[in-house]
Length: 101
Picture (cartoon, rainbow, N blue to C red):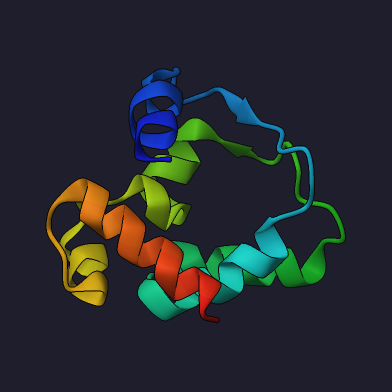
């Protein structure tokens, strides 16, 4: 998962649109708010609450810089939330935390 997100997808141009195969923003934002409490996250939460579909509204740049905690494994806030610093360990702990929600 770390390689797929943080090496393969993250290498795409920041303006690449993200079209996931299913609606995941509404569920993921619930988890995201337990890890990050930034203004962009609050904006995403409001967007998810007010829009039935969110696919194709975000770019790789949005995901890695603002919203996707799994793409922010080097962010000190995310590391603090997991108690880990190694990117693979941070990813594993985030996955465990999300699974236990």
